[in-house]
Length: 173
Image (cartoon, rainbow, N blue to C red; front, side, top):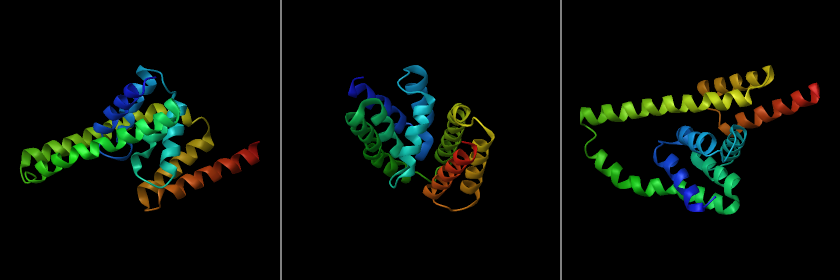
């Protein structure tokens, strides 16, 4: 795959997202569904790898780039991750000067709501591939509850999930 194409696909995802995993639906549509560069399992792996270490929430885009193009792909992912930040600074200044306008506030709220819908749409197919037995469903439910109702850092939730997986493998075999 040409690096420029990879960069542009990753840039499309990061430029149309707000933060964190909100670029996931676009990544899944382009890289898994449309171009078959990754499987759902590989995308899950990239998200897990990118989210389990310290750093920005969108770091999984670098992991996606790495899985597709090695070190050069990781660099393309990193560039795609930081490019929107440099482009959005003037936009934030423009919007900030007009934040008291009801139409603008309404447009921002609607965009954020659409982003939540996109996240849900991308999460369901990924969950189908990952939730293959009762223990994994329990781990997912427990993780959701911890994220939703505590302020526990994500690294601890992921570590606990990994520990639960190890215990399950040791018991079941």
